Image (cartoon, rainbow, N blue to C red; front, side, top):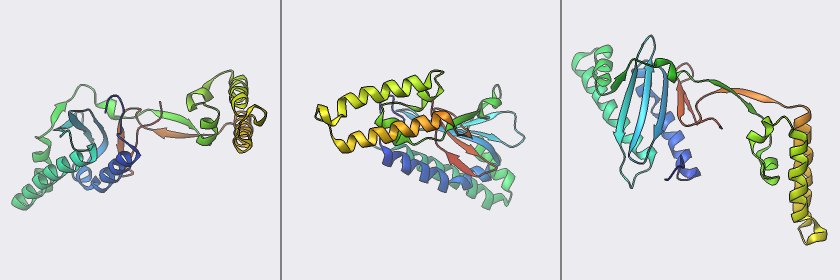
Length: 214
């Protein structure tokens, strides 16, 4: 895995699907916020219940041959069975939830760290950025116009038909250039809550969202 968060696009899609079909466990734990992340050795799900002042961290070891989604599924199955067995034994939801929470590591020092910051994300055609070898971080530049023009000139030199480039590629470059200039003139954004290195769960929406762009 190295420093990559996902082994492939398919890996990320599997993880999104697996996280979202297992939200019943988080609802049973009365979760306000949660995050999920992983290393080469572990997966970690941090849970902040409603009205709680501490974080409950569920840590589960990874098998080298398994993807994060597979390991999360195994952990969710273990915790889910624990909840249901206790629920069936006592007929009390709160006792089942309390038992599952005993499986977690508790941290009462920084519950606010699961409350995600809000970030403005530009609404822009990613293909245009790719064509000019730019990234979304470049859109924050105070000298955005010159940066777009410089990027366009560099790519145009490589792909201009007079220099042996493809006429179709050159047209795409010019279209990307025009699109980015228009965006710079009237930039649009969406506000999104999340973390740059973790999946984030919002109990009010009952949905996981993938890490936000840095």
